Length: 199
Image (cartoon, rainbow, N blue to C red):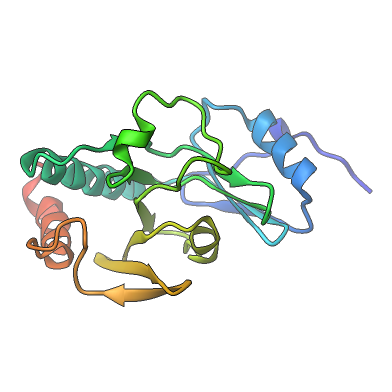
C-alpha cells in the first residue's frame, strides 16, 4: 500500500478527487490536515469523501446567488446569520459537507455570536446554496443533516428542494421569499450578468 500526504495532491479548479472507504477518524484527520484557509470544498457521506476545487464560473454564480439572498433578506428586514462555506459534520450518521453558501433565517437568533458549531445541539442552516458547474452535489448529506431548503444552480437554472416528510421535493418557490419569483429571477439575473455585467 502507498501512503501519500494530502499536500502532495493537487486539485485544479473545476476538478474533484473521490476517496472511498474513509472512516470517521480518517475523515476528521483529513479535514484537520486540509486546514481552514483552503479553497477546496468537501462532501462526506457513506464513507465516501469528495474534495472539490471550485472554478471561477462556479464562484461567480455562488457569490451572485448569495448576494441575491442577502439583499432580499435586508430589503425584507429579515434577521439572518450567514455561515458561508462552514464545515457541517456529525459523527452519527457519519456525514460532513461544506455548502457553497448557507443562511440561518428562522434560527438566526439561536446562531448570533456562534463561532463553533455542535450539530448535536445546534440546528442545521435553514437555507443552503449549491452551485453545480463541474460536479453535482447530492442531497443525501443535506437530508441527513435535516436542512429544510436547498437551492441548486445547474446549467443556468435554479432548482429549489424542500425537505418534506424526510425527502426532498422540488418547489416552484422558496418559503423564505413566498412573494418573490426566485427561480425565474435568479435564472434571469445570472443570464443578464453574462452579457451586461454585474451592475
